[in-house]
Length: 378
Image 1 (spheres, rainbow, N blue to C red):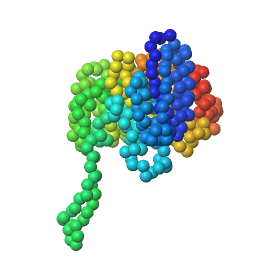
Image 2 (image 1 turned 135 degrees about the horizontal axis):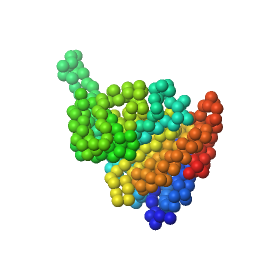
Image 3 (image 1 turned 135 degrees about the vertical axis):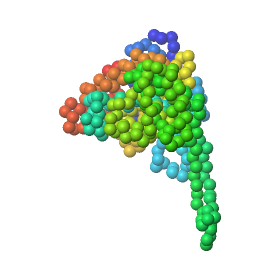
Image 4 (image 1 turned 180 degrees about the vertical axis):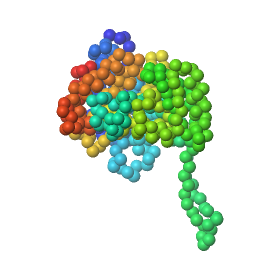
């Protein structure tokens, strides 16, 4: 057994979070046993669970646990119908998730979208649009851009329309700001990941309209010089959105600014057939032992199905695989989990979100059954 013990902060959160987290931990334990490494998994409340336990979405004890961990395995937070009067700054989506991203400078979001051949029927595109298969990695800059630039809302008086009385209205401003350094570091992440895949990066911008797009294109082109073995193409964001629907198989790695990446990664996620299949990784600085990161499913809390044991745990399980790969450098274990997921789906196991009665070999299974099957396959 490895002498290294890896520390994971497991923050299940709200809704279906605890259910799918339980299955991800089950699979991690199976990988731990097979590949002889040691993980210390400590669970802590976050989101509304944190508010109930300690009065705030990210309790001090939970944040302290994360600071001493080697990686964070995150579930999901947010219950839209609960206490709508709570100020947005205190709601879990901001007070917990965005706070953790900022606290640990998690600047690179990786969202892989892969459609297994056995699930081609759940993709919204016709088979001829799917081409030879959909396997895309969206790399999104996570800490700059429109979401984090200066913001303001102000009352404005239009004196030109003063008769019979001044026209008053409100004006909101969000400023899109990004620097050379921020573009460089996310570009390196994209090119490095492309080297491990099919060696192509499509950089998304709006350089024909936005000044930050011009800078983005210039800096990405400069960084590309360090990776001559990778092909680089530039694409305007509106065309990128269209091409995802027309011919998604053309994409390998899509490199995006924060706002564009948020939108396009959700569009790409729909091609995978279900959010319940899609993991994500938010990465920070590289350490000697690996890269610190927060790993979470692409979907949300799904409160309408919480507690029913029907949620798909695969996104959470694949997020755990990404954790092993990027934070602990346990590639063999990560690959084994991903292969186990494919094997179980190829055998016909389907949670409700990907089940179709027309699929001859399909068998509808519960959250627990899916997790147990994947753990056994590992």
